Amino acid sequence: MIVKTKSMKVRHIVLGLLSISVIAPIFLYTDRVATFVNPSSSRRDFIDDVVGAFMVSGDNTRHLNVLQHQETSTLKEPTGVVYSDQSTDSSPKATVTREHKSARVLAATNEERQQQLSNPIKQVVDRAPRNLTTALDSHHNASHISAVKLEQQPTQRARKIDRTVRSDNKHDRKTEPADVKVRRLKDQLIRAKVYLSLPSIKNNPQVTRELRQRVKEVTRALGDATKDTDLPKIAVAKMKLTEESLEKAKQVQDDCAAVVKKLRAMLHSSEEQLRVHKKQTMFLTQLTAKTLPKGLHCLPLRLTTEYYSLNSSQQNFPNQQKLEDPRLYHYALFSDNILAAAVVVNSTLAHAKHPSNHVFHIVTDRLNYAAMRMWFLGNPPGKATIQVQNIEEFTWLNASYSPVLKQLGSPSMIDYYFRARRANSDQNLKFRNPKYLSILNHLRFYLPEIFPKLNKVLFLDDDIVVQRDLTGLWSIDLKGNVNGAVETCGEIFHRFDRYLNFSNPLISKNFNPHACGWGYGMNVFDLNEWRRQNITEVYHRWQRLNRDRQLWKLGTLPPGLLTFWKRTYSLDKSWHVLGLGYNPNVNQREIEEAAVIHYNGNLKPWLEIAIPKYKNYWEKYIDFDVMYLRECNINP
Image 1 (spheres, rainbow, N blue to C red):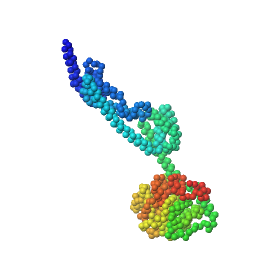
Image 2: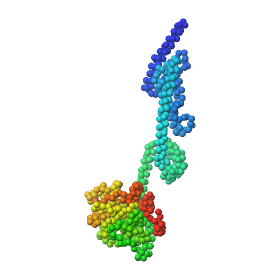
Image 3: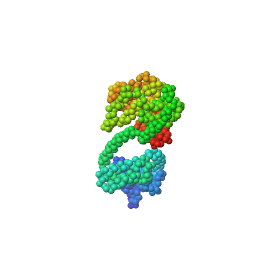
Image 4: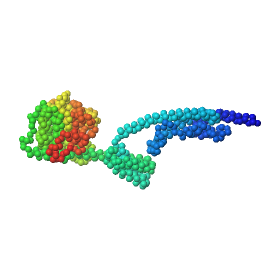
């Protein structure tokens, strides 16, 4: 009986071992297939069921050690983590750190589990024979160590990445714009106003009151600030509160279509307002350019009074014998602006190597003739020679000889300038500047008649400043051309088609619309070639053809482009830099290296609307301590 009982126990043990070694792998394999097919199934739950079904005989309390190891390994913190849990910081950075650490712990656990599940027979057999437990424990420890090593490698890479990210963030902070907070506050204002205009927000009094309060606070904090350093310290706190309020409004308003519709309406309204403001700005700028400042109106009156108090012998300039000497350097300057003419003369002589060889021929109108003479009598230009002439003295310049003089006095020209309905409808307001009505502006086409005994003349506008010695211009060989000028084809609006009407066959047949324009303001004219090629008659012919302003509007550059077509020699651009009267982005290096800088445009340096950073180039050639300037309150 005892032998039978023992044999039955042995049989049970053999059957148990067979079940463990044969059947269990089948179930585990089936589980692995099922897991592959259905990833949502849990391996762990299935293994628990297998362990419950296959207990070691006579022991209903002991489970497989492999599951015990997995459970405890998930609770153990892997060594080699970068951050610790000892800090109680609840900041977003700390939260992100804990998430990264948890992810690494989970990665290590998954690696262990994968290694352990890779041999299912060993997992199940591990529990039955007690003498195999030690071997499996050592295998598990080796797996755990390898998992830790694997954990430490990404940790080291994480340190390198973290340093890189931090250095990149530091670089971003250094290069970020200076008005980031200002722009963010303005964006918050726009968003708040959009929400306040939506029906769903209006129906929520609490959110509406809160948003209105935030709009007031942000507006007050923003003020007139243009960069972050202008903002008060409280601005950051107000920014955070406003962002919280906007998030509340966002939760209330969930209709994106309504927000988009409102933003489009606001954009359209802003564009329309911008168009209106641009038009108003253009009109006011043109009006300011036409207006004579009070100080410059006072100056000629004060000088005229002083001039007529002089004796006749005191009203003459010295060195008048040099006026017709062709061996000297002669300048032609036609202006009714006394202060501007003074800057041209002063800046030229400040850089001249031999001032005594320079002769300035200034022609002005009848109103400013006495004042212009008085200024240079009271402020003589050193050893240089000055001549001031009245345009009324040129008796040959009359309507019968000059077509442009006849046109300037015609009823159609007066109608073009002084009829309000025409002025409002014309888009080209710049052509309505009164300087185009002045014959002084067209006097540049009569240089041979004004200087009959001279061979070369350097023509200068009154809105230029000289920064280098200009005597080298007289030695330039113009190669048979009449005009020496700097081309202005660097910008597309300085091409011929921007000045001339190429829809007219007279223009389109004779000229290239893409030809480079050139700048008036500093031009070398070969008067001998001028006379030989009869350039004045060419100018008269084009003026007669343009009596109805069908070829070009007004001004002197368009007829100059036609008159000197294929008769202009291109000078190096460093001789003459233009744009300081309209372009705030002229290259600073080009300005510094230029022989002549030109304030062409409406933003003249003597006006309040001048570009501030360019005014010093002009003002440094004025002595503001002169009595006449102090009396007329003309200050830098």
